[in-house]
Length: 308
Image (tube, rainbow, N blue to C red; front, side, top):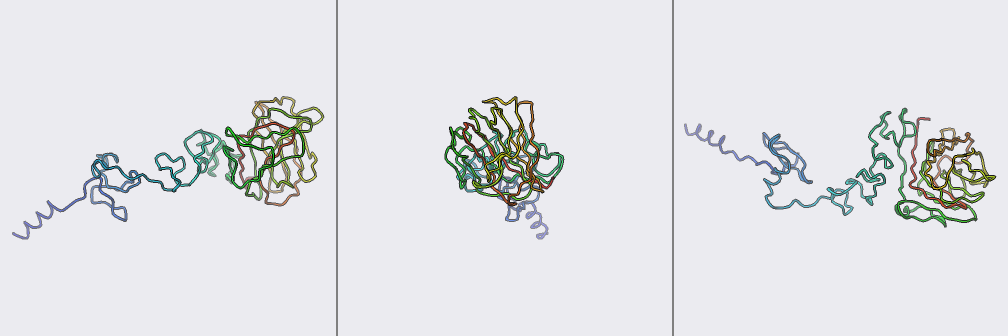
């Protein structure tokens, strides 16, 4: 009888952790409770009966949980736009996801990924074929660290601005390089453009490579492929609808055969130059280049691809 009473008493009074108690090291909880992460702490809660906040209140009372900063960047996780990557909190598209961890930092509504390659359609140059990857992005809210910044380039109001009345081409060159098939993209606005001036994006170095841009040739606005090595025009297409102070999207596409195509979209119109052979090395640095122009670039976005 005594043994039976002891068993009954043990069953009735066996200690059980209350809801809100910390989980065990292996994230287990007593029977009837589940382990959830709340405010950076693993706690046991009653499924379906207590909200996580209520469970924490039940365990900690009036004490506040210590702030959590997983990436150690000085911004607590509840306010961090990119809680797992230490970054500067810049958010180009305003979607509350920091550029450093945004799969498509130029488009707020960018959840559709038709080809399933992880790059949303708004940033994917080939949204129907998988194999594309975001390689580089900068929104120019500050001078990009470690980039080569030539004279005439400045950074303010979330843009890289180039202003030069004449002279030789001046470069803004990324610190890293990309190899194989790649696409370089920007949105820019041209405020003033002199004869034989131009603004563009490309792949190369300040001494070599090729750029895709807007220029004036023979008094006519042109979409231009420009040989940085030889300082000569490689191919051009007239843009009769080009207007100053109007946004324009530029794309330079280099395929696996190292052939280059230059494209521009202004309003409802799209223009493309013919492809030209590119004899440059496989690995090149993304860049922007300007001469005798006043223009602003909102960003530089580079993707690599196996789709071509």
